[in-house]
Length: 337
Image (cartoon, rainbow, N blue to C red; front, side):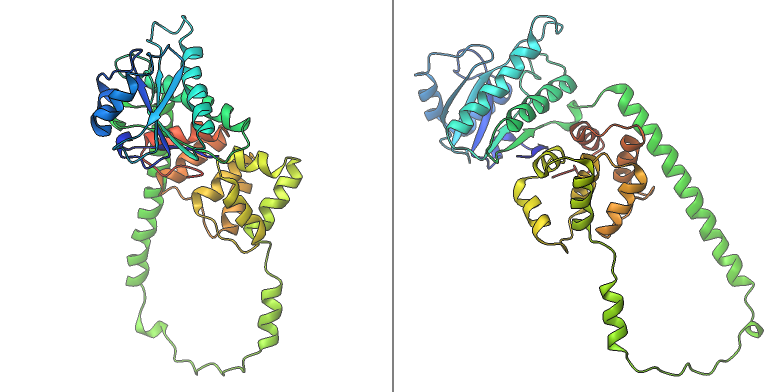
């Protein structure tokens, strides 16, 4: 069920199906369309000739031929005309109709380019928003465990909204500066302390008497350990009054991983997974830190990833896809991935 944003050449994606941002003739063109036809070989063009073209917002499916995928789903995106001529609705239809074809073909993984964001002129940040929103809408209404990849080939050509990027950049700079100042002060104190140590300050102590190992006391201590990450997660889900599926879908986590966490109280998730659940549960920063500690992690101002997470939580924005867009823009690991 997860939606993943990746930087890759879509012709090299080993998904069950890749989506081609085609023109209405389906007979090849430039950009992604040309690259897919070149990689698939002439057999793809031969099959496309039999399809009779395709209208904007609709989709048609062919075999993958020489590509590392079973199918190619061809869809025709809208040309950007300022956003007031139904472009968003047409672009949404591209994703919904393509996913419907993928489901009908039994696909478990589907890779999309940013449809219409090339020569058709759709603004990249808005195109990504439509892609994520449309995929999420489809997957939320679908019982399958399909994974959707949004493939961005040229990261340099993609950037989140200028104001948000600048705000996060300033937030990172402030926290980085604060952390480095504190770290430097701590380092400067250490040599000074060492210089003030004299031999006379030391006294020779007799070795501490050894104690016999008390196995029962160790067993007692272990039995009193705090609740685990899994136990805290399940407790928080109950406290929020939401279902398991609502939680793992909002966290952009697949059902199989959630089942592992639920069935094993000692399961140790990755840091992005732990934070994804904290975001899905809309935990404040203090509870997010507590949940991370259960998994053996912490938030630090020495990490851009951590500071970006802190930025969104402090601003009350728990939209995991918007967080992932920002993490992607700053070249950081994504949540739920």
